Image 1 (spheres, rainbow, N blue to C red):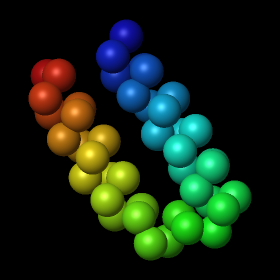
Image 2 (spheres, one colour):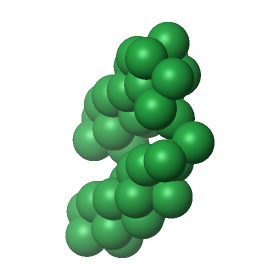
Image 3 (cartoon, one colour):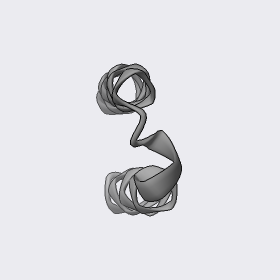
Image 4 (cartoon, rainbow, N blue to C red):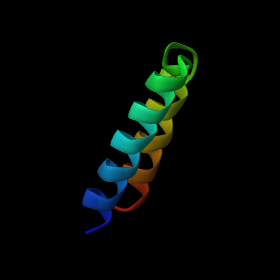
Length: 42
């Protein structure tokens, strides 16, 4: 449940940021954030 929810948020953020043209700048930050959240819930 948590993983699916996190993935959906990540997809939504990725599309939103890509649309805004800012994906390149904070892609790395998003990756580490998702990784941290995933590790925390395991």
